[in-house]
Image (cartoon, rainbow, N blue to C red; front, side, top):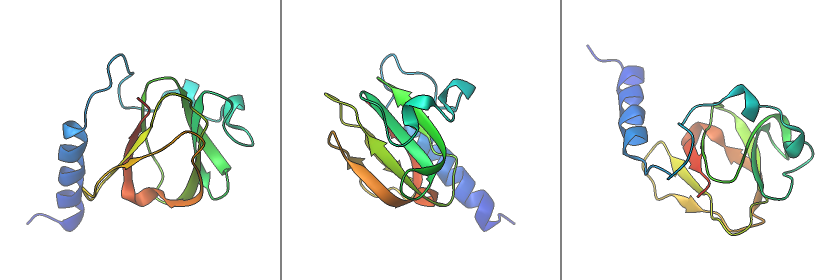
Length: 122
């Protein structure tokens, strides 16, 4: 018997494999160099996209500068700060709903990370 958790895991894996590749981007995994960065403390530094495990830019953070794929490891309410210029990061959801394309300067103090699979920054 296939459990619901297994079926959801398979669906998420299939969806992640279908996401567009970002030319020149790193693989979709979180590297130690992406975690709790000084460029994400108190908000994203110019040119950075930062995601936070807690609301209002609090908690642990992961960030990327330039083009990259940012898998979201959290299942809680969190936040993000897009301080990138000239690019439009895209948030992809695990349930297949249309992705969000984020304009420069977009900041959310509360987002449900459980619904988010990945963010691409170019």
